[in-house]
Image (tube, rainbow, N blue to C red; front, side, top):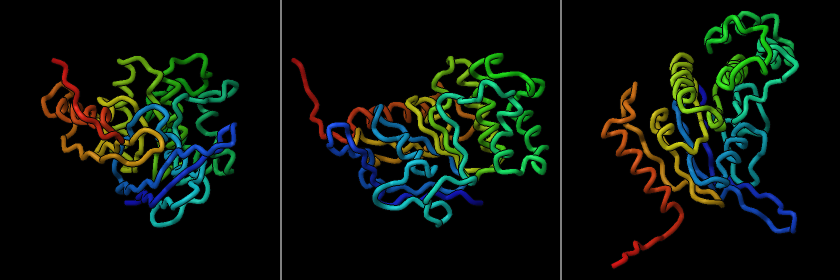
Length: 259
């Protein structure tokens, strides 16, 4: 299997309008096993998406190194697919043309045309190939976004809160869809989420990040079989543990008592 990600001493800085320096990532170290599913979770604005974009090669780290299969990441690559929080489909293109856009840009569409049909069917959009994004629901557009990310056969699929804008029922259905795709393709998946239940339901490991500047606070192995029962005692124990860590992440708090 391929798709191992290794992050060594990664730091990222941005310039504020007033000339000061904002530290988004501070000496982050993490190894993501090939074929595993991990979730990055932490306070809003802590640097989760910054880290995901660094793995994608969209914003390189300023210090340290990120590797994919022992090769340093220096630019975006077809070995990494990216599904954004919003579907970001081209409104003037049909669903089929949106999904095949990257293949056409790489001039390999003719040899991969059957793959487009395969992934359209895989995400449940067969029969909607000629529809336009405005004619479909948010969940269906997100399925198209996943198919677009998958059709290039990436080693690693990066998911930046792809289900955040969906209603609860659609979101749970899409979680099962993502798990099915992950199992079928045996790829590495790294997902940013703010939803603790979602992280426990999907992940082999939950990576908890501190408030900015982000460091890795703790990595929790989710030792539950699949499919997972969201209401089971073991599930709820993991949920409670992660919430407790998030509440105290990056801080040295003493409990307060009111008598």
